[in-house]
Image 1 (cartoon, protein in one colour):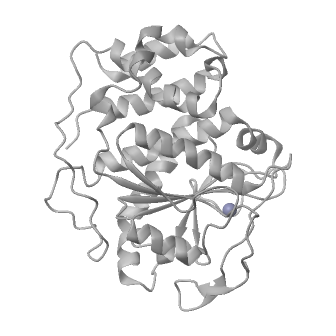
Image 2: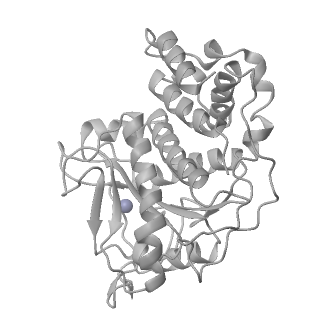
Length: 343
Ligand SMILES: [Zn+2]
């Protein structure tokens, strides 16, 4: 069956329910195997650098120390980030979402490198983190942030560096692969029902800036997401809650997976004109078997939704009754993407 047909069926089945239980969607037996084997290797050999923006408070670093801004000047080493309406620091929201993105990507076989080890202490200046991304061999790097603006300013956006970037490699990579990865995450957000930001000059979910050092110093394809505005009651409610953080994580993961499966498919060594010449190549994949949808598989796609969600709900420690129709449909999109042949 085609994923679109199944998706329509699932949507119809769930249409009446605001809150549903995953166990109502698929047999409980599917929980026995966290992820089907083919999906568990889908991103084998791929590295993703995940940067939860900012850092915990337990450090003695000077945030205003001046560092390379990637454009011939200098800027502050770091900032503390915003605090949401109900007092949740941005660094914690970013950390929580990053942990879920990490869990989801690892359940698909990817190697994930984090920019900081915890949410208590230091995590490096902006230039340190860009260098760490470059050294990680990542196929894509994502910086996860949430914005602070007045109430009424709403929605997500992705920051793209103003071109040209002085560093020729960063310029080439961010204007091609980085932009493609960014648009893949933007599209996943839109498909999930998140609204593009209605402020700060954001157009179609994208904001071009010359004052963000990370993207200008990053030589692997970079995505810089501002998930929402912590100063807006509606955005803050999503950013602060575990199920809202899960929605953001699934949207980010879906975009990254879409990019990774469409660009530089694992196992290809052919023309990759956009690959940064001086950045380390992603680790050579262990020639994964080509994945094809099994013929029986309407039911398997639904089972895959459950299997993709299972490690995430475990990581969150939430009951599956907290899963909404919107979230299940989001994971359904991800499952459909993963079930398509690649390469
Ligand atoms: Zn931030």
